[in-house]
Image (cartoon, rainbow, N blue to C red; front, top):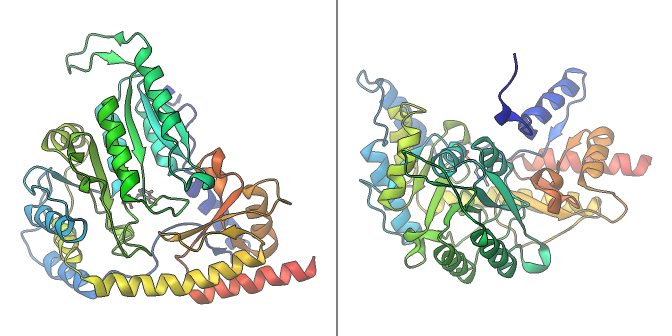
Length: 406
Ligand SMILES: Cc1ncc(COP(=O)(O)O)c(C=O)c1O
């Protein structure tokens, strides 16, 4: 069979491939410690599991659910946004529950992009932005984030890209959907706290992003799954005055509530945007299992004690990860948010792939090479906090051993 042209240049997701490789090594007796992936290893709150169990036992919860999500979950999301982010969202029409925020990235691209339309994506950034844009027929324009600029976009450079894009003759095509133009700059993906760099947002940065979106008539897609991890002040881009004119925000329970496998996320924004994305999404799936939605609603009522406890564990692990990175002579900031530590490799290594391969082959520990997030990440590695302190200590021991032996 010939695969479709749209898969041209799209490989299997890096971690999907890498986990298979690690599996093979384990089958060969290696016992690799995986400090790569950001999947919380701790369980959700016991009350959340209790709701799932109790609801699942009922006889009338097993049917297809509404495409717009359960009103209970939408109300819980609205209350959560108000409580933590001081953002008002109408639960009836400004919230769309998602089967994880990852699917939302694809839905947004399919909803807004015509062939050749351009999208600003961060480099380094979550690889799914790039693949979703390409799968939807769009073109990625990467904007670089670097340490010297606190991993904020260079707005002068963005301005030039936007002006250049507007200066071109639009390609008009007949479209019953009213799309009309092809090849225009349409969307910008942003994500703060930033993955993989761990950079926190500032109010000033958020204001600049909204002003940029409004000035150039761009839809700014803010991906916000890490705001509760190792960060005492969760922020939403929607909190900027007038943001709903040009911003939609993705959020998720995967990291904040240890529910990555449950697949619960959300899209928030103006009523019109929610309608537009629903037009695509309602053709793709048939809603989410009701007990999962009700349990997610419960999770969103958890208080500060929950987040403090989750973060206490991550802080303890982070100390160990700092130790591991010191051993590898990497440099890093101690002010990072999210469930990873992003670190610059020593000059002796060509790139993060070389260091990652060495640590994997010599010490049986996997750390993620920064280059998978874009070429601006090539001189970095990313270490996950989703393994126990004991596993991280064992990794340190293994690395020490190979360092002594070499
Ligand atoms: C930046 C970023 N956005 C989105 C996601 C996807 O999260 P979800 O589990 O909600 O699909 C991830 C997961 O790793 C992520 O790192």
